[in-house]
Length: 564
Image (cartoon, rainbow, N blue to C red; front, side, top):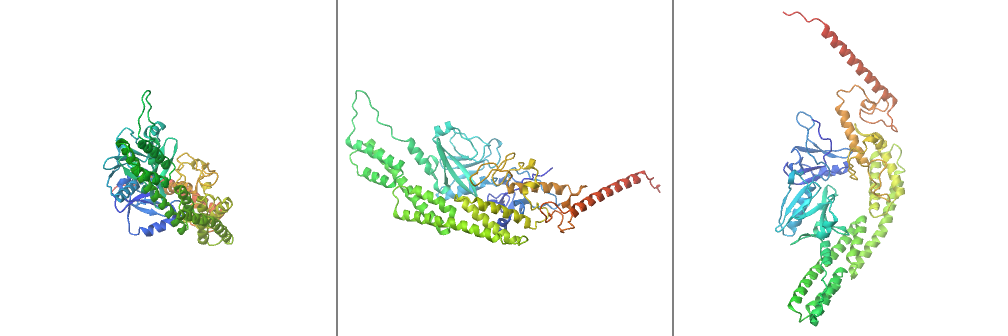
C-alpha cells in the first residue's frame, strides 16, 4: 500500500489522546526556535486529529517547507497513515475547543464541548458547545448542512454558504474563522446580516446571553429591527395620551437616535431625563425602565471599548509595531468619533505622528539594506546575505501591511533572493539554485494545494499584495513548488534500487566535487563531465545486467552434477 504523501503540519502535544494542538512552522529558521521551546516534549499523530496514534518528529528543510513525519519503525520501512486532514487547518477543531474553554471560564461559565460526527461526517467538521440553556454548533466546513429550525444556534465557517432568505428571517448569523499567528491559530467571530458586511470580533469582545452567542454587532442589528411602531389611529375615536406619556415617548425616540448615532454622552443625558420624569402610566413606565436598562449597559460597553482601543493604540506605539498602529488608529477614531476627550485626541495624535515618522524610516532602512547587500561579493558569505535578505523581506512586508507599496525595492529584493539561492551550498536532494518553477513541469504546477495562498488542486496561485492583489500569478509560489519538488525527489528515491538509467545529479561531479543529489555551482545546467560520468554509469549497468543474464542462461543449460 502506498502511503499518503501530503505533509503533516499539525500534531498534538504529550500523548496520543491529547487535545493540545501544535502547528509546525514552515520555515527552517522558525523551526529552530520551535525545537528549543519544545525541547523534551513529544509530538503525536493524535486520535482527535483522525491520526494513527504513532509518535511524530520534526523534519527541517531549507529548500521546501518543514513538516512533521512519523518516527520510523524498527524495520526502517515508511509508515502508512490513513489520516485524512494534514494541513495547517487540520487541528482547527482543537483550537476552537481550547479557545472556547478559556473564554467561557474567564466569564465564570462552564460548557461541555464535543466533536460530533452526525451521519458519519469527518472528525473535526463539527464542534458542539453545550451551554446551560443553548447549544452552539460550529460548522468548520460544509460536511454537515446547518439546521436552522432546530434549537441549536449554528456558527458557520467562512466556507459554509447561507442564503439571503435565511439572513432576512433570522436577522443575522454568526461566522467563525481561525487566523494563523506564529505556531498557533486565533479564533475570530463574525456577524453577518442581510445587506451588511460581516463584522469580525475577537472572542474577548463576544458575550453569552439568553439568545446565545452575541457580538457588538448583534445589539445594533436588533435595535434596528426593534424601532417602536407608530401609534395606530382609529377613525372616530380620539386617542387619549397624557402629557407625561407623550414626553416619555419623545425621550425614547431621542434615546434610539443617540444609540444609532453611537453617542454615549447623549445617551447618558437622555437616561438622566428618563429617571427624572414623574407621573407616567404603569405600561409606559415598564417601557422606560427597559429602555433605560438597555441604554445603560450599552454606555458601559462603549466606554470600556473606547478605553480599550486607546490603550491598545498606546501599547502598539510603545512597541513600535507600525502595521498595528495604522490599524488601531482607524479603530480608535471610529470608537471615539463622537464626544472625543482630550486624552483620546492626544493618544490618536501621538500615534499619527509616530506613523508619519515610522514609514519613511522603514523605507530608509530598506534602502540601506539594499545598499549594503550590493557590496557583498559575488561569491560572498551566504549566511550574511541570508540575514540581509530576511531583514529586507520583513521590512517590505511591514510596509505592505500599512499600504505603502515599494515596487522598486520589491523587484530588487526578488533579485537578491534569487542570487541567495545561487550562493547557498544546498544539501543533497535540494533543488537547483535557478528559478524553482523551471524544476517542475508546467503540467504539475497545480497538482498540490498552495500553503501560501490556499489555491486548491487545479487552481493557479494568486498575487497576495500590491495593486494586483487577487490576480493570477504567472508561476506558482515558492512554497508550492517546494512541495512538488519534494514529491519528485521521493519518487526518485523509491526507484533508485531498480535504477538502470543514471542522471547527471545521481553521481558525484568531477568538476566541482558536488555529491550525488547536490546541484552543480553553475547557472543551471550540470557540468559536461558530470553528464558523461552518468552516461558511463548507465552503460556499465547495462553491460553488467547483460552479463548476468548470459551467465544465468549458461547455468540453466549446464548438466546437473550426478547424485551420490
